[in-house]
Image (cartoon, rainbow, N blue to C red; front, side, top):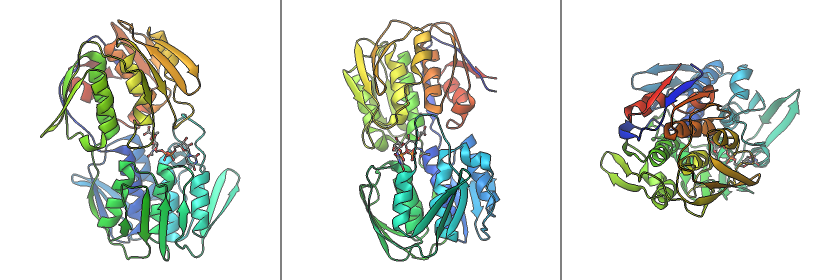
Length: 417
Ligand code: EPU
């Protein structure tokens, strides 16, 4: 199950339904800890990271079951459990359990959270903000001990609009005494989804979707019934898959309102993107036109999580483009395997590459080294002539429920095993 085989050179055609969002589901699942009642979270993707989060909630004393309608979490009996170290270190978003457990129990002990190898990913912003809310931290033997004897609101100004730190602050602030105001908050739709879930549990939050959030703490929370929105990064992956192969696809339930920057880039690359009642309809030219420059930025800018897929699509376009990564420092690990497949990519510095479109890529055996880079290799395999074998796919399965099934629905010749 760790490899994906692709016979490339076929344009994507057809319809596919977009799964629920990984990065919205994980903090929302963590947030179910805050209410003593049962919550139901619908449309969660069946991916490894969601199973890990279920495992963590379980180890903290929650009763979690995956039913037809969604994931049911009964957080009536949360205790200070021993969380499986593997589930913490293997997944960056285990970090949102920090805010949730501080909010619910006032303390937590956890391993330093892991995640994709796309950068150093420090947690200084989380620690500084929660510190101002009365949380004391100590690190011992690689473990993080956090305790808040009197969690209180604070005025916080973030030095960078960190998605995870904004989520942690929200989780702690709804349970804190008094008001918290966050200046420079992340505006990503996943933060808004967390605000929406907390509000559906009774929390009082103003400014969701903007860079100033005001949270009125200690409003009693009840369980919530919530639907996770569709995954804008999965939809964007198939959008660039269409652009890479010169296809014509309908992405059912794609969250178009959250995809403006990706749709804009696809438009610059010559794809016609049209919102229709079922979702997003895309028709791409045989070869994409490359714009001069693409720069990743916090939302609503072009998302870092789609940078590798856009790069893969551009390798077979016409013209040349500089791609600049401003969020993570190690997000060009996909360049060497793309070059092995015949792509013309020059690394200008650690944060910038220049891609010159070539007429075709050749199928090869390549290895996924992280989630989004792995998905980009799959797109390159779809565009390439001949057979591509992508190994290391456990990374890809962390974020895509069934990338092979989805792409087969779009006519690709792709199998895993
Ligand atoms: N940063 C710090 N200090 C901190 C926190 C962040 O320096 O305390 C830096 C990071 O090192 C990074 C930048 O700030 O260079 C952005 O980090 P952020 O905290 O915004 O990201 P995150 O919460 O760790 C989430 C997503 C990522 C996505 C980023 C940016 C989840 C689980 N992860 O990460 O998703 O790339 O926001 O949008 O929500 C993915 O799905 O493949 C993925 C990596």
